[in-house]
Each structure stands twice: as C-alpha cells, then as structure tokens.
Image 1 (tube, rainbow, N blue to C red):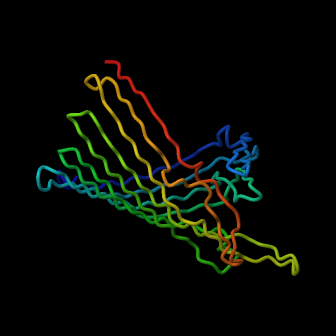
Image 2: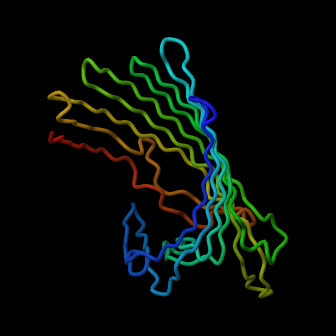
Image 3: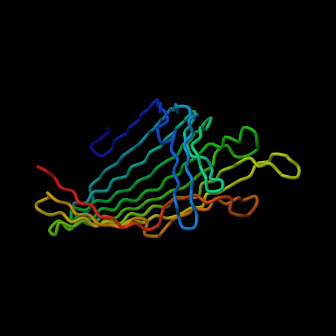
Length: 260
C-alpha cells in the first residue's frame, strides 16, 4: 500500500488439477434447433500442472458529490502443461483432450464509478494472447490475440428497495490454426481459423422486502439471442464448424430468504 488510494499486488501460484468426473465420463447430447450436439468425456486424460503470475495496481479516489472513482489494472501470465479442454467441433461432436502446452498472457483495465445516490458504472477492456502450439512446426505467429470488453450499469432506488442491473459483454475474435491433409497430394499443411466475435446482454431487477429479509429477482439473460458461433476457415473462405455459445434468450426468477 503506497497510500490509502494506491495498492500494488503481486502473486504467484503453482497449480495442479486432476480431471473431473465430467471430463472423464461425460456423455451429453444437447438439442439446439435442427442440430444435436454431442460432448463426450475422455478416460485417458492426464492431470494439469500450471504456473500463474499476476501483477495488479489499484487506484481509488473521491470525486464530486461524494462519488468514488476506482481504476484497476493488471498483467497476467499462465503456463499450463496438459491443459484439459474441449476439442474443435467436428460433425457436431466435441470431446475433452489434453493440450501438451498452453501459455497465455495479457492485460486488463477496469474503471468503476460509484455514486452515493445508487448509480454504479463498471467498464473494462482486456487483451489476451494465446500460444499457438503448431508454431513449432510451421512458420506462423507464436501467439494469437483476442480483445474483450465489458460494461455493467446498476441503479439502486433504496427508498423503494429496487435494484436494476444491465450487463454487456463483448467476446472478441479468437484466431487459431489446425493441420490439414490435402486429399490429392496427401501433404499436410497449416490452415488458419477464426472463432467469430459475439455480444451478450443481461438484464436483472431485484426487489427487497421485509427490511432486507426477502429478495425477489427477475431477469433475462442473453437478450440478443446468441446461439451458434461460426468458426471460419480463412484459407478456404467458408465456415469450418459451429460452436454452441448459448441456447438463446432465457427468462428467470429467484427468491432469496435471509434467516437472521
């Protein structure tokens, strides 16, 4: 802590994670419109081992009318051996696999404004670099970069016990590469793919009653109706596969009772 407003934090973690029962034995069929997606486990998975570094700097300061402005920035680096992840979708089917090596690094910047009258605004951007394993064998970039952004606006009417929140998230394009065997020449070549970007929007309304003893929440998730995200093959100029990112709009309600 350099001052009550400025804080610098650094951390290192050594990680180990065994595959879960789901990743080992899952056999799931998900109907989505005219398609049925199959996600399967893999009994031969190995455990993950990882190194994780993080450096962050936070700055808070009061502004006009009793409001507070907070700025958070961070840098991160992750190195994972035998990363457990889902394979690329082929013929509407995916299964869990181990990646020999996965490395990522990036930066986050988050800005938050809090007003005592009940208005909170939270805006953030980030950039993530992911290691391309095939760069060992082919003349391609070692890392691919993906931008992300998020924004949340919350308005509280304390006298009425109401809180409304609107959350937006932008998921940027995710570049990647895969090996392809030409049917005629039988030679292997490298092809570039891009998982297209998409937007998510959620809305919630919370009503607090009985002096805070009861919360009733209603809302809608995925208001933009995102379902399938195309993976485009840049070399062929056509869709390579389709990934299930959501199942469309969802309405929900929740009742929470606090026993005091």
